[in-house]
Amino acid sequence: MRLSVAPGKPESEAFDRLRNRVASALWRAIVAAMPILAVSSHVAVGHVGNAAAVPALERLGHPVWRVDTVSFSNHPGHGHHTGTVRPEPEIRDLLQGIGQHTGWRGCAGVYSGYLGEAAGAQAIADAVDAARSIEPELVYVCDPVIGDNGRVFVREGVEKAVRERLVPRANAVTPNAFELQRLSGHRVEGVQDAQAAAVAILEWGPDIVVGTGIPDGDDLAIVLVTVESNHVIRTPRRNRAFFGTGDLFSALFLAHYLDGRDPQRALARSVAGLDVATAATQAAGTVDLALIPNLDAIVHADRPD
Image 1 (spheres, rainbow, N blue to C red):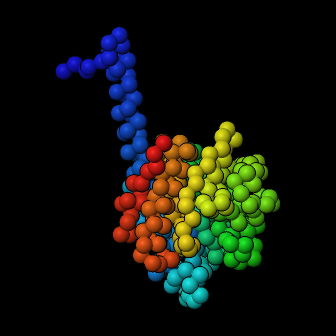
Image 2: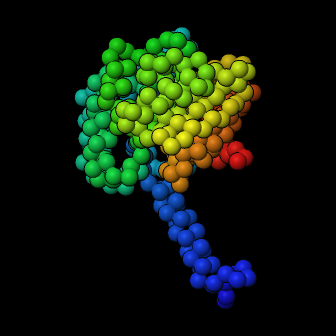
């Protein structure tokens, strides 16, 4: 069997292109099956923290090494909840146990989110360092959960610990508009403000800052800033807020970024998935994400170029 080639093109070039495509597809399949460490909150009812991130990561093919920082009945935003915060020694013990059992071999990425207490940040930082010593290409996405809508809702000391221990180690940071303002010290009232704030955070060490929920007239903007470029995607405002959108977005961004290491493509796919999730949740008339019934559509969503 002969490979058909375009006129004037040496057959070896066609074989080279085919070989490169096959190698790329094979590598992407390998990466998609590599484990991800996920350290965040968990709720029994609803989908926030790991309860949002883990289903998405697993549906995209990644085994997940999951550590819950808190275990609550539901999102506290409902006005009531029960449950417990996992103490730092337990978080550290679990992370060290994962390292001892796996040797961190094959760990493709780390996602971190909500912390129940400040001390947990150092345990996560130590785990990231240990995993990176074995897997230098590991990608760490930090969702710096501090607050939203003008209000800090984490315990005292968490904000400082996230800023000092986690953000500098992250490859990508995914703050909402309020968190972007708190971390950078810059006012964030629009896209240009958000871009300036993101540039300030890049100086601490991350390669990528993605600011979400940025006010932009009748829309909300998502801004992606790297040392080389800025990129903005706008989406229509929904008529209410939903619980777990930041957690889901961060997990999607990590998985999609691992699939090709293209931040703009990862952003487009993640925003598309989030649009599917919020549209379905609004149609369902809930504030807890309608995640599971729509999971396939969410993780495979894309936006036109």
